[in-house]
Each structure stands twice: as C-alpha cells, then as structure tokens.
Image (cartoon, rainbow, N blue to C red):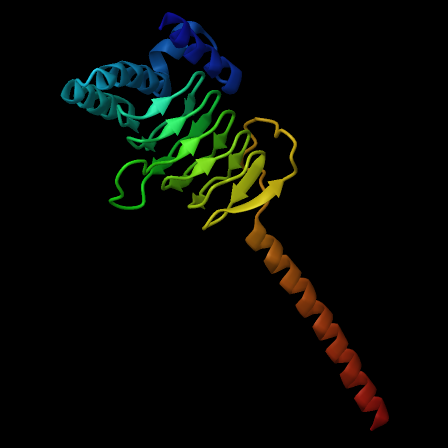
Length: 217
C-alpha cells in the first residue's frame, strides 16, 4: 500500500511541471487526495462494506470535487490534473499510467446492467471535458481530445477528437504522452477548409466562363 501511495505522488512530479515539493503535493493536490480516498473506499468495497465505502466516496467528493465510485478499479500511477468535475463510474476499469484532466466523465449511457462503464487501458490520456460513455475500451497509448464525446471502442495508439469522437491518428507507433492535448487535429475544421478551397476554385472557374462568354458576345 505504501509503495502504491508513493507511486501516486511520483506521477504528479512526472506529469505536472508546477509540482515543487512533496509536502506541497501531499497537502494541496485534490486529485491526489481523491485517488487516496478511493483506494481506501475500494478496499472496503471489496470486503463488502458498501455503505462505509460510499460514505468515504461522498466525503471525498465534497472536499475534492472528484467523484469516484468505490467499485471502480484503478491501476498504478493514475494522475488526475485539476480534478474538479471528474466522474468515474462503478464498473470503470483504469489501467496503469493513465492521465485525465478536469471535467472528464467515465460514465454509462443508461440503465444497463453489468459492465456499463469504460475500460481505459495503460498509458491513455483523456483531456479536459471529454466524455467517455458506455462499456467501451480506450486502447493503450491513446489520446482523447478536449471536449470529445466517445461512444465507440478506440484502438491502441490512436487519437480521437470531436462529437461524436472520431479516430484521427492511428499509425501503430506509441504516442508521446505529454501535456499538449490542445494540439490535436480537428476533422471538422479540416473539412471546412477543404470546402472553402473548393468554393474558391469554383468561383475562379465561373469567372473564367463568364469572361469567355463576354468575349464571344
């Protein structure tokens, strides 16, 4: 347990350039507090102390703004950056070295029974405000762009953006895990750019046709 807690602290220094000292991280990082509270609640939940586990979960939610159901399974070196508004559902499974940002929801899509929340594999990154819904899988080393809504499985080594989420990068190579989650391609913007270029070409062609017609007259 102490080794796991130490890893939770170390990942903060790895992922957050603003982290300075161990004391500062331990006392002021709400995401870290939420993870530690969850590890206690999850241990009680596994021993079927469901009520106490939920109480700890709700107290943590009140103080940190992060709601993690005690039934959720979370791996090593999990990092929540600026965790306000994060929601993680009961049957969610999160692998190792996963990073999520504020406003992320790992939730369900309705009143399904059984496994109804996402599975997030190792080294995934889910950016600000993204919603990952349903019993789907986010592959290893994948990135979910800010504000995306993901409703389908995401392959390994992929980048997803948009509503609904679309895979825009999948090259089979490991993606570099960094904080540049705002520098992701926007498929809608790219389509609009192509349309503008096509309209401009059509206007030029139309002007040429009009000019030829005037010369004939």
